[in-house]
Length: 376
Ligand code: PHE
Image (tube, rainbow, N blue to C red; front, side, top):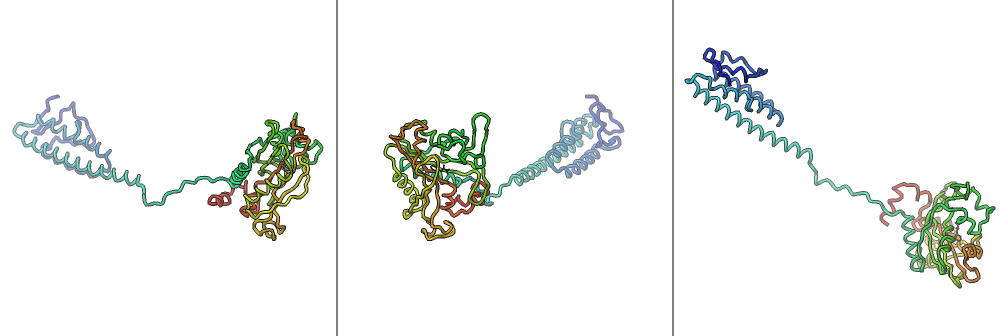
């Protein structure tokens, strides 16, 4: 360190270590005490302006740090005339103690405010009511499918599923619906591809009749829930996509009485022990004889009301004895085996059970409608 040069009895900082800064004063004509007083005043004023820990750190650097102003003064004490040195040393040290204490106090204060600020920012109001997670519920149609599967399981039917896209072969041909049958008209069939083989969205769950029989030998007892599609205008009781539940039982000695017994039991399980079923002649190319079947209205007990449109009966679907041509088509011997089949409209059953008056609600994605089934 270069030897400080005394100048008019006043200490001057060694040139080499002295970097000129804005805060530097010309100390040339000041006593050491005056310098310290000046430093004290500026340090106190500057500390008062410090608002955060960063500011405090830089304050510490400029006054107390190794290159700070007070440290420079202490280092230069050697150049003070011997007579004045002890007093100057005491004064400088006491200023150092004072500034250090002020620094510590301010540091504690600022850390506390900083902590408070961070705590306030992260604050969680534990008294706020919790936000309930929105969990989905089972769609009413899926729920009806589960219920139907359970009922049929108790009667010995296995639930199977099939593809929603079908060849015309399974959707029509094997069901004894010849190529020129009106049901094959695109008027009510959504055709996916008609280049080589005609591919359609199944117009009913019945293609699973042949597929199931091809895959297994009698006895057969299956129910097939799933979507079906028809090219038709929507209204309160028609949608272009809907659900059916196909039923098929094939064995030796199966008769129409078995069909009536099974569907009667279904109606009572679903709609109450008092229910009666009605079978009337109907025509489907793949059954002979064919019937439509209805249940007496559970709402009015058959007297007639809004739900049954004052007829006393609710139509549930089509059914009949499997046509011998259908059995033969899958390689079953029609002389040995007989069977029954039925197709139920699932939305329709939910509508009856819960009094829903528009089928379009089921695929309409209106949560206000769907949530009503959450608590049932
Ligand atoms: N598949 C027929 C329909 O969609 C219903 C049906 C199924 C009728 C089985 C008889 C036997 O209308």
